[in-house]
Image 1 (cartoon, rainbow, N blue to C red):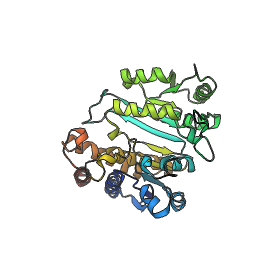
Image 2: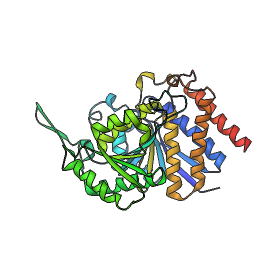
Image 3: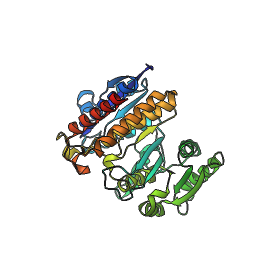
Image 4: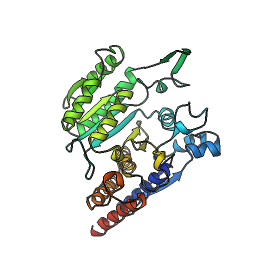
Length: 361
């Protein structure tokens, strides 16, 4: 038995209280099959935390998370929060900023049972997460947007060498572990100083990785390339807003945002967070697709495996992924993937598939 890993559980809003517990249940089954000991710590976040603590991200939540190995973050519905919370940085952005989770890693791989535009897609987008053209990432306090007059709105976009270098190295290391191809996405023909700096620093870092082939595209051209030939790309690195747009596009091209996982990581901590939103229109109906959250958890275990040099954690990730794939191939899936299973029925089927596989081995 390896050491006990302590993981936070933040259900969030909307469908979060359905898909996060489902993901925890499946990860627990995989951990038991792998001989990994887990200690899950539920923590307040989101609308419920506003009601109980007066804020969507209580200080006690941040303090406890700092002591953990990682955590699962459910989606938030911050647009429905009362003011002043509605206008403040949302819970996801708050945690990314507080813990300097500078790399948002979002794979887009064609998924069995999903209606993919490109059924051969297998790429990863590495998005710089702390600055760029999302103004709320660029200030110590406040959102980075302001209005000097009622008819004028201004936002700040910041690119720094330090932030670009660290996210570029994450992307190059990932490319080195995959097909050794990396694409830099920018808009240096127009935003010459900002994304020009992003491009030039990435190319400087590329010299440290002579085994990785490098190309680059403007953001507008890249959207076309993804639609036409997503299968040709391996790892893509870009700034914050471009990365958000491209990763949603790539998720749909490879099947659905309902199956698109991600993690947000620094050098020493990471959180699992599905790429989709809180879907308040279907919350509480037990019909939400938990796959993206489940696979985000698998990504977290992969990251923890590398961080702690513990192969058993990578085994947890493989078991989770295999359980999800086997379940969907067997014909059990939620409505958005063409099936009829509820969230809980799909979860039970994945847990059973994990148990059946463990029994055979």
